[in-house]
Length: 133
Image 1 (cartoon, rainbow, N blue to C red):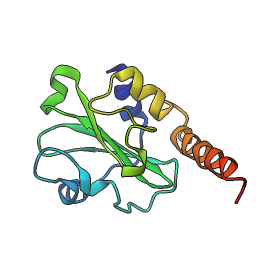
Image 2: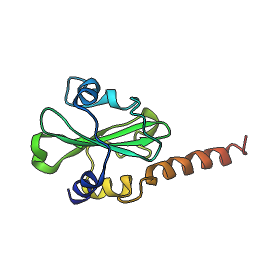
Image 3: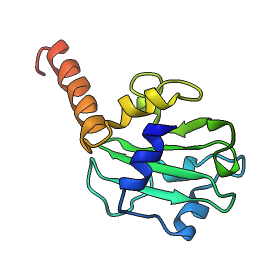
Image 4: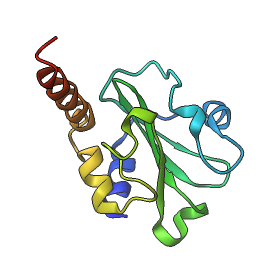
């Protein structure tokens, strides 16, 4: 989990425990964080640690937040899972759990605008396909 760990350590914005708890869905996932407004701009990130000592990263995008987090307490087994807006499912964000390499590609370690740029390119392609209408 080298990429995830590096990114987590570099992120300055931290969600409060109240924000994290409000985003929990009761099954260990964070559906409630997907459309939450943290007052951050597109491309910015925030990190959190939940009450089970699982770390997570929130990527702010044009269509909602991508939430990537450790599935098990204390990062056991190195499994990263995610919640994201429906429009990004399987298109920008892989299904199921993601590898650390997939996390690096998705988040663009060191490039806060990586996912925003990817989404922007998809929107531009759709606009072009539709004849610029």
